[in-house]
Image 1 (spheres, rainbow, N blue to C red):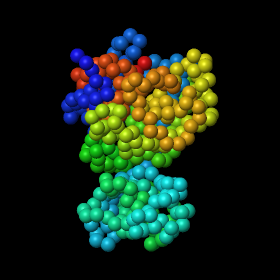
Image 2 (cartoon, one colour):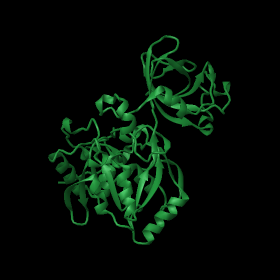
Image 3 (cartoon, one colour):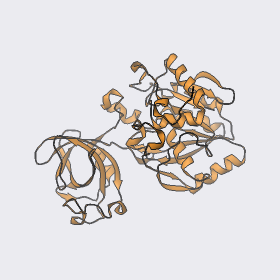
Image 4 (tube, one colour):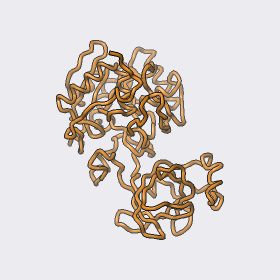
Length: 376
């Protein structure tokens, strides 16, 4: 039987709904860990707290230090009072504004470029028009800030807008405003996307430091400070990269062939200092143990672990050859997703198909708040 590894249907599987985790484990590192050994083709069952047993003092643990921002927004159209819901995607640089707005009947030069714009995704009844405003509500359902819609980017409700406080542009940075009007943007497959106060802590890694993500690097959610301390005590070096996880990360692939898929772009950074230490690790015979597919994209998006800062649109699929990652810890991913394609490309297609089937048979918990896999 001929296998078409370029077909998206090849990366489908059936998951019983009750295996989708709606809450994390009370203790983060109590999650189960499916260990997949590529050298022996063996699969065995452990827990995240057992991770140090699979590391050596020569290894380097690489984690994504992005911080999830309260990006889920609720408000109303200022003129009509109609309900509006949205998602903050990213701040917009001056360079990205160049040439925008020329054919909309509304021009960005009404306000100086020094005022930071937002890139958002929103839904409402009817059609928003350039120049219209949306009023965002705070946690007490009080009007807090207005968004001036300046430029429609796409038909799916994507806009560039300018935040206004008391009717005028504000120099407050977006992260401060979002703390007042936003909520945790948990994925729609978790409790239908409705977050609560527990998600503020649960949907954030304990080492998050760089705000900018609208989704968590979920493999990192398993780590407690105590587990990180145990790993450091072994002599394992701990290094951080940044990838601001975007909305496109968890979207299923909609086209029939992988080579037809347009990969989303996310901002990432590998600093010169971390780059140097990772290359030292390799030179001394250590392994780069990468936590999460987002960290993989940063390292593989660099050239031979060279320093890098900018947008990454790398789509890892067969027959890609990895050059920067030796071991991968990752959660279980959605069918027909770019993340599942990446993991099966790294771990070996047949072995990973078998691992997913075994995880389902042993009722592992799937997706963002679910259990983890360690691919050696």
